[in-house]
Length: 201
Image (cartoon, rainbow, N blue to C red; front, side):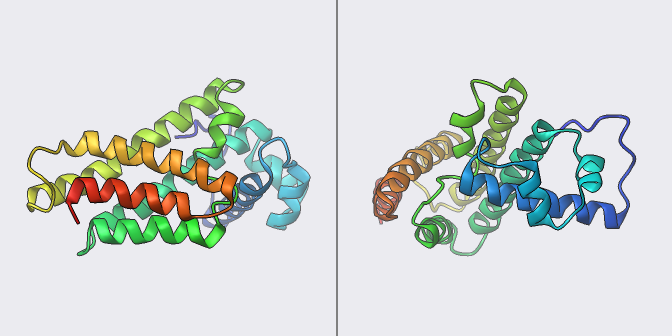
């Protein structure tokens, strides 16, 4: 989703790995400390790259932050698709999202959703990327739900795309409650209640 500048050379395989390492390091730091609380020097040290390498791949912090938005969205979407297309469908998806919340006690909140409050009102480009990431996330959930719906594993009157948006909204709200309580319990309650209402299980 990030718009690469036309001046940037095509990456070699080694260059692509270096860039990915920088983005992953930045994503972890930003999730832990926020955008404002993360410096390029901290990212450089965490990624074990030189300053010249940092500026070779990213002209400034804004460009790096946009790459982090893409990275978080792509990682989430990949995980959603893998869970929902598995044999267990919704059960696998439930286990995945709740395990993730329990592992961190929701500290830092949703890797993508937590960026909204930090960037949406001050960085239009980042806001657009986050919105696109949420659209991809909802689409990934919707694809899995349509497959389950076609197999008769969801009520016939459920609209998979509407349910996908509802699940995504539930995840975001539940993440917020879990984050402030430093407990995955609110997250687990919200997810389980919605799934029980939908599937009757």
